[in-house]
Amino acid sequence: MFAVDRITEDGKKAIVSLLNKSIELEYAFIFNYPRLIDQLVNIEPITQERVAKKLELLGKESIQHAHWIMQLIEGLGGEPQLPFEVIDRMTDIPSLLLKQLDKEKLVQSLFQQAKLVVEQNQAKGILAKMKTMGAASPDMVKERSSTLRVLERLEIDEGRHIKLVQNMISELNLPMQQ
Image 1: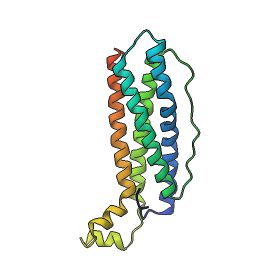
Image 2: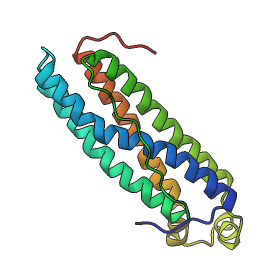
Image 3: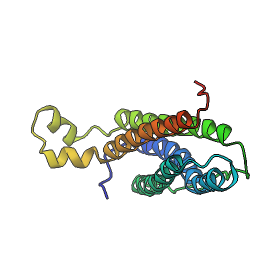
Image 4: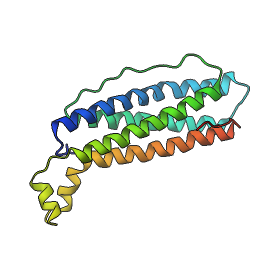
């Protein structure tokens, strides 16, 4: 999917640690979104098809994110760790959506932190010197920043997920906590 960047070993370890935290949450999303849809449609008196469809979209995108995160971790020489928490059977949809909003924000924050680690720990080599002199080809720069590009895409997607969850909370007329 992408080439491994020139990142210091300490940087790689720090990024892998952050990514393993984010993958734990992504896997929880994958398993919990279908359960939330079931509760919303079949158990709760609320039958919000639009909200259920948004939850379905979030679940599908979480599967893609988990795949990208595992590839990043492996590309950085790490091992994906997949412990996760599965929600109990809950009938309190408002509390669950508010918790989900907090988790989406946390995942976005983890991607932001990982981006900072990438930027701070890129190995200073000939490519960096060539880039500052304007001599690096676009392909060389693209290869060097592939981890950063994937993290930026994941961060943007999480921002969209945050807005979707906020929208669902609004559609269900739930008070949003900050």
